[in-house]
Image (cartoon, rainbow, N blue to C red; front, side, top):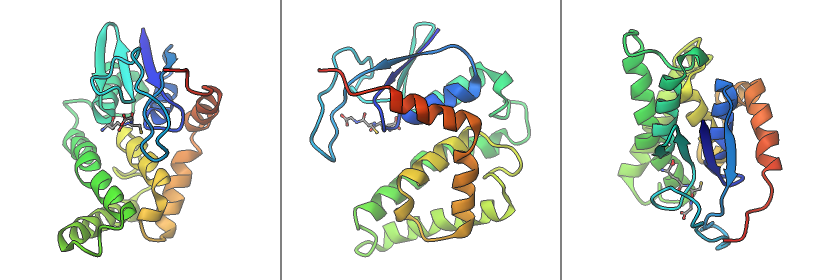
Length: 203
Ligand SMILES: N[C@@H](CCC(=O)N[C@@H](CS)C(=O)NCC(=O)O)C(=O)O
């Protein structure tokens, strides 16, 4: 059994998308979280995440926290979803590179741009430029970052870019990519489920 600890409109929303892509039974357990942007919400004692964040997933008694770990783990556990190259596949290295790049390069570039930190830091601007260049190169070939196949890397990259679209330059390639990902049936179902997850329970 899979349980997703979830707070609406957060990084756990894309885990609903992931689970809808995989297509196995799962349960959504709503938890409250502290929302630093608004100051609302409280950490939830019922949340097993070590930092009381979301997402957290429990699969057959195993706890996973960190979005990248959850995507890697679940797509390996359910290879029939066909959203991750297997260990023996020639493009496994490319896939792992995109997954690590997402968390080590794209997220910091996105948050640096959102915080207005690029102008004051040549190093951060250089990192941001590199992220944009790598994405442009990949999507010029497209339609997904690894080519023809949509993978877990696209799920993470596109969800973060949709959330932080203004952190990246206007580019029709980017917009077409985000729309392509967003229009997947599992993504549409996930959006409806996220909206139905309701208000946060009292902490
Ligand atoms: N690196 C973590 C970040 C998780 C994270 O920061 N989640 C936010 C929601 S988007 C959260 O739970 N914040 C509550 C808090 O900071 O206490 C991941 O990707 O899973």
